[in-house]
Length: 370
Length: 115
Image 1 (cartoon, rainbow over the protein chains, first blue to last red):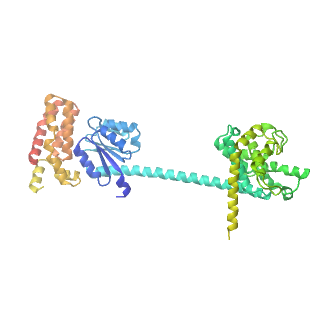
Image 2: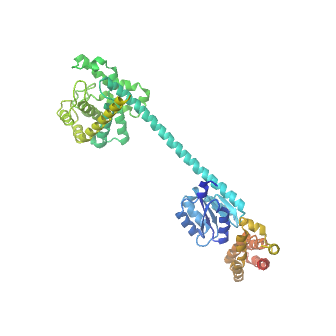
Image 3: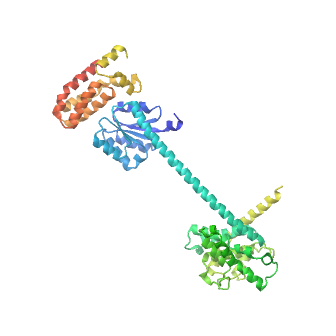
């Protein structure tokens, strides 16, 4: 017998010792056999040994008879989980009907014929075993499908990040810029009133949408994008189109259009240069005409630019960057957002340092490669 | 168990081989229960219940006796107690009483054979 079968146990419930001995002798080599002398003891045994694999049940017993015990098992949903066999000397029609209605798997006549009991009990137990294996297999496959779906989602997220990073690289920004914007956006929405009304899932989608905020820069010529000096009015007009071009680009990627994050990504790409006073671009939206989550991305973008090194500037210390933002040197923002941002600034600075460390580590690793 | 004993048990209506098979070939285990048959209270309880006209208790005792007889393959006792069980389940006390002497005869024969 395989080890798995050996560990299974069978409960025999019968008030007659001889009946218990006969049934026990039939099954004791393959199963652990538990015995009970009436229905009360039988239910106690089931409570103590919840992993019993089958119950052989006599009908006429003192205290609690077989039918009453069966009824309680049935009401507790046990008859669906383990097979119950009624072992009875006179299988009266109505008793059998009642028993089957309560979920008995088989009715076996007394006096028992060992090989018949053995075959009938074992084949039903095998059925239950197969059923358990099957549902375990279904669970396993379900897990696998979920994992694969997650892997696919991670993969496409990676592609979006790579695309965004490739574009950031052109303007001398590191790839980690987009990851930091994503992290800061998520943090502020999760921890401040700016995220009011958004579920955790929606916040994740907004953060994903933040990744592609500058995707439209791919349409801006290098000469303008990387010009060290000030842009001419004409060049600036061209530069401003990266918002429109970004939103347009996103609508042309079918996979992006169908993505749950699309509506956020679209709005963020389009409106992350709007200002609270209505003097931003491209649409001159005022106040909360720009959705709060896009406002968050816009501020995160400005902050990250200030504290990062660029070709035209050294990084500002976090405290200085905060003062510059509050002082209105970098645009006009929602006062509530400014308050939230200041409140969370220590956490955001920590996030930035962590990201920097990872970036440096990556550089070191690349340099050390032979 | 020697042959003489086996023959005596068979003569008393006991299907010895069948009984041993029921105990998975363990003859000693079967004999342990067979030798205890005389101490089984159900025959006495059945007689008493029939005399007192208590059909319900007579039914219980007859049913229990039938079960023991079945397990030990006491063919004749089993057949006759089965008849009583059927009569008593139908509530026919008179018919059960009428069948009792035949049951008693087979019961005595088994006890004599066991010795």
